[in-house]
Each structure stands twice: as structure tokens, then as C-alpha cells.
Length: 500
Image (tube, rainbow, N blue to C red; front, side, top):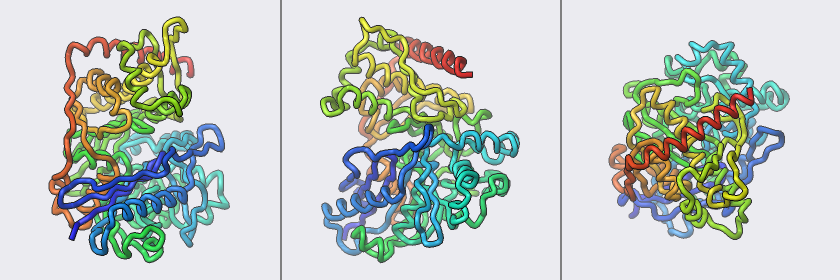
């Protein structure tokens, strides 16, 4: 009998489900729904919301598709893992009904609330105990609801992160994890528990916080209801959960101090693992509990995030005629323009407040446009160079914190399918880039195997992980790419100064 594991990745663009063969370590089938990107609602400027029931609908579709296509038999599926978009807020009443749309990761409405709490709690407490400013994270979003929707807040039974909600729909149980609470800035790293000071300052009832479980553990089992609507066998354990960036690092086996992982999907990230509770004094990058953390063997993830990444590439595709151009063609066109895009510079911050800019929302900018010289080739290359420059800006903050950034792991997907993007990333940051055949849903499946006891340890879980390509930098290109970054940074500083 086969030993199978199911991984579910709840993104803001789509929901992806992967079925993994535990014995070979290889993915059997992956499927994402919907075919087009899920919409993000913005009722007011700076807001970003999605209906959690929409995620649940596509979870059902993707699970049924994968089960039907692979003819999974009774007893073969040993565990389910869940990865999810970080920092979202889901609220339910005592009957587990959703009270309002989820305020998701790129929503900016709570920036001022986080800044006020940073002053009131004190910089020393926040940086030493929370390792972050409260910022625009989940706790601040919950405080926004308390202040602006008091009648709705009175109905709250539990607050959850997006993955907690999907686990609830699958099992009926409401639980959360240390890593999830740390990403919401509810976690006190000194006491290794909930921050009573944050809860008190924000007037958040401790009863709203779900029971806390380890990332690798039996966290619930598929209910009769979920079995009926998904086709899953009743009783299968849900045995892993993590936010998308800790999970992406896990998916790439970035688990030890000094190991790094990167993504370039809707947002762009670099995630570095440390055994020390590092923090940036300006909270431009953020530290969370990593999936393999324990009190005896602490493990932390330092995350830099750029909101305006793949969304910029997607925007370019739309304005160039989405039906008439594919991403591969765009990448080839961008590659035909020279390094530096002949003076065209893109500042990609067009998707809300940016943490690496201390929560400034400066928008996206295209600078140096020459109507007699530049065409879509230059626009594509400039956009990709601008995205990498933004990541490099955060990368250098992480280096200043003491992280040793020499080799970075990524899945060969999204922006990393572009030769221009890969070459720019490697040379601008002077790093070796390893590309793997994996994704967040496969990582969640491997995590489920650890939590359910199918794998004895993390090393066994990654026996089938395939390294596709290693890209090493060439010193010959350091100077031209450093010039691109220097020009980009000078434009950024000018824009920031004009916005003061």
C-alpha cells in the first residue's frame, strides 16, 4: 500500500494542493485553483481583503481534483499539511461562522495603530521581547476591528490566521501555532509565550486566542462534514501548519542557522534562519518563530518582504495585452535589453505599505523614460531589475544584522523562471543560487509526514528533494549590477525625501 501525504498552500492568488509519495519523496500530482488569480477586494485605499470561504471553496476543488486523478485508496493518505499566506486575520463566532472578510497581508489600514503601540509599549520592550515593532501585523489588524467595528468585535469567539481557518473547516477544531502567533506579533520571545502586554494594550481578550500546538503535531482530524465535501477519508490527521514564508524555507530544507530561502511570487522575500533572536532596530525586516523551534533548540526566521514583486510583473503583462503575451515571452524580451535598461529605472513599491521602508507607502515609479529609446523590452528588464534591487535593499539590512548570506535556495518558479531575474539576483547580491523542484504545497506535505510520524526526522522527509540547477556569480558582472543598484537606490532616496 502506498504511503501518501497531502499538502495545501493557501495563497492570495490561488490555492494549491500537492500529493506526495512518502517513500520516494516525489510529488505525484499538484493542482492549483482557480485558473485565473483570485481577486483581492479593496473597499478603500490601502485596504486588501478576501473572503475566507473563497479559500475553502478552492481547497475543496483542488483536493477533489487531486484525489480523483490519482485514485487514492482508503488507508493510503497518512497526513495533511497546511501552508498559508501570512499575517491575515480571520474572525469567527461561536458557531464558526466568518464574521467579516479577512484583512490580508498587504492591507495597510493598521499601520498607525502599530506605530502608536510601538510608542506606548516602548521601543526597548518591543525589540527585546517581540523582536519587532507591532507594525501592520495581525494583532494591529485585530485592534483596528475592535476600534472601528465594535458591534462585530462583540461577536468574536476566536481569531485565526488563514491556515488556522482552513484547518478548522477540515476538522472542526480551532488551534494555532507558535510560529503563527509570532508572525501576528502576539508572541513574547523572552517568556516563550503570549505577550500579555500586547493583549492588554490592544484590549484583545485572551479567550480569543486559540489553543497553541507545535507546527509538527496531530492538530485535528478530518471530520465527517469535511470528508463529505472534499472526498478525504474521515479521521486523517492534520499534522503540520506554517505561514508561507517559514514553510517555503522548510520546503527548501532551510532549517539550520545560516541557511536562506527566497521567493518571488506576488510578494518577494528572503528568509534567513538563525539560532539567535536577532532584530533590526528599525523593524524593516522581521523575526518570527521558525517551524522547527523549541525551547531547547531555538530556531528563528528573519524575513524581508517586498510587497510589489510578481504583482508588478503581472501588471506589465496586463498592460501589454495579457491574452497576447506569455511570461516566457516577456522574460525573453527583457533579456534582449542591456543591463541597466539604458537608464530606465523601476521602483516597484506599488502594493501597499512596505516594511523595509518603515511602513511608507511611496507607490511604484518608472523613472528615466526616453520616448525615443525605450520600449517594452526595457520596461520588462527594468521592472525585474527594480524588484531585485528592492530585495537587495533588504538583503543588506540582513547582512548588517549579522546574517551570513552566501547561498540562497529557491523553487524554480514564478520570477525565478526568468533568466534576467536570476542573473540580476545572483550578481547584485553576490550569492550562489540553488534552484529546486519544489513548492509550498509539497513542503506542507513533507511537514505533515513529520508531524504524523511517517518520517522519523527532517532529513528523511527531504530524501526526494531534487536540486535542479546551481547558479554561481561571475565577478565580471559585479560592477555593472552594482551600478544598477546604486542608481536605483538614489532614485528611491529622492522619492522618500520628497514624501516627507
